[in-house]
Length: 172
Figure 1: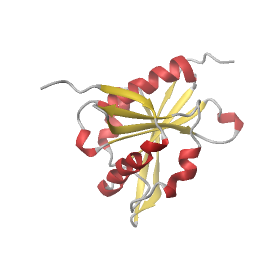
Figure 2: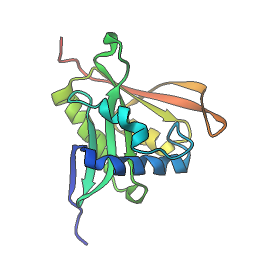
Figure 3: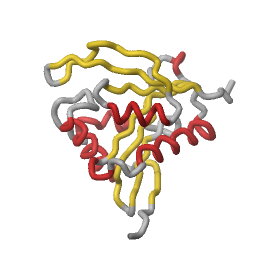
Figure 4: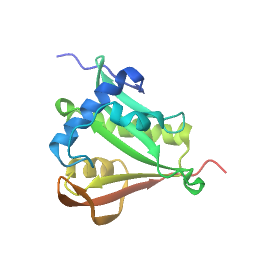
């Protein structure tokens, strides 16, 4: 069996449908998103438009097929949070347990240190999403707290766990 060729690159408009399909798999699983029903590319046009050189959206390409994505989103539009980003990672269900999440997170970590220079990166993870909590802990993120019963998804209140990582500041 040959090893897959893995490439991480900036997402393009032609990837949007696949990105939404991967997200909708997480919606169906019911443990990782705020949504309780599938969304469309049209539903997320404003979300896609927010990404720029400082806040990129990457995809992981495995043998020419997008198998996951990672977003570094604005934490807040307030200028005090310029050096803080929120991170999200989603992997296609058929590509789980292949190390793609670790690779994406390691890639994001490298980009943050070498190019993007964020001071703080925050991940919000629902309490039921043990796999994501483990991934972020293994990647050097610390548990910073929780927001109990903060979100009502599919008629049920859920707890949001907060993981974060501080980076050495290289910008003044």
